[in-house]
Length: 174
Image 1: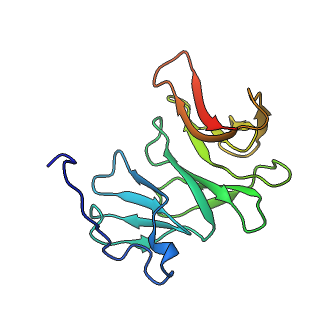
Image 2 (image 1 turned 135 degrees about the vertical axis):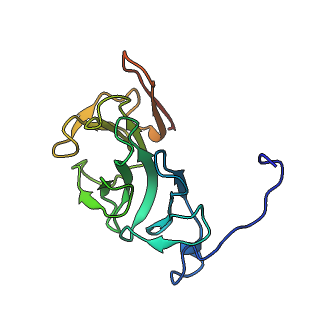
């Protein structure tokens, strides 16, 4: 009905993780992969049948962000924080089936709360964090800080203009 009515739809998401693991914090339907959905709670889970069933594909941790590269649909990014409050990024090159962990050094207590992807360059990613935005232009091998308009701002949302010239938008709160 196009979203006019809603009902709970669990079908095994978060199985074996306790009640908090059954609550999805982020969800992403993947372009270029019909029926494939990724969802994050305390781990990343994948459905290949439109949400009828789920299986774990990513490691445990606090996951705050999921994003798919518009330049390379098989490239998916996830971000969050470790149990010692350090930011981490997960990168998948196969539509979320397998993941590699990357650790951008941001110092102190921090987390990846948002991810923005460049519209035409799959190696360029922008991380919204606490008091900063970090970027990579080499697919995550190296990271550096970009200017933040407010060092006290938590960046909870990021978007890139879908065409060039590039503009990155960030949303958050102090």
